[in-house]
Amino acid sequence: MKILALDSSGLVASVAVVEDDCLLAEFTVNYKKTHSQTLLPMLEEVRKVIELDLDSLDAIAVASGPGSFTGLRIGSATVKGLGLALGKPLVEVPTLEGLAYNLYGTDKLVCPLMDARRNQVYTGIYTFVKKGSGWRLETVESQCAVDIRVILEKLNALGREVILLGDGVPVFADRIRELLRVPYSYAAAGRNRQTAASVAALGAVYFAEGRIVSAARHQPEYLRMSQAERERAQGVVLEESWGVKHL
Image (cartoon, rainbow, N blue to C red; front, side, top):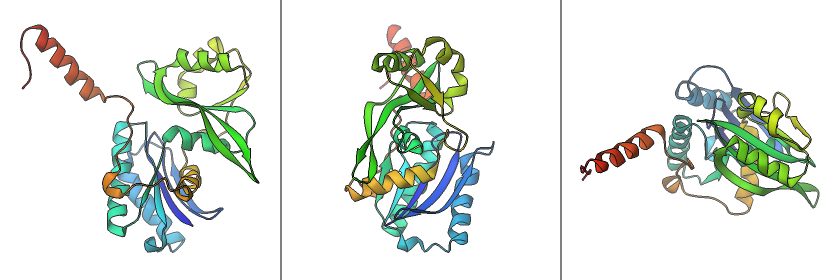
């Protein structure tokens, strides 16, 4: 089984290819340039280095959201184009699940935190359960967009040691120290941000389970409205309060 994976859901841009249980290649960048500048050149570099025949892929996995609205749209457009051109199915890997998969096999809870602005995080809570010779990722709290205090209170209520990771950790480090009462630690560099290798590995699991969609049907999962949509909705409410409605 050969899976190509892309993740442009956050600050990181990442491309990887996994064949069976082997990571053939990964190209990950977390530095300034926008994903529209980096993602396709990274994919082309990976393709050249491992002499990848795109027709040999079984599926294309993508971090499907939540995350940066622009980043998700770029990733979505890229995999839709590839899927349609190659006639390959897509595997939608929820961003927080892919991020949690970085810590495969840990006996602690895993809580990814992505900065969603306005004092909110995209987050979820996950655990790994032994299954045969490996581990299966299970959801304790489904991915959501909430105030940072909400997810910390949920972790306190669960009462288990937790590992935190994601770009929201440095943003909310003070709140974590102040409010989190269970034992906790932070994932190490190299494991604490999105990586397409984890998306590919988890995507292979989901592909084997038949969790695929056609390229034509794929849509990112935003979880909440964009700023432009919120401002438009607020404008409609304001105009309606003055007796003026959009048609």
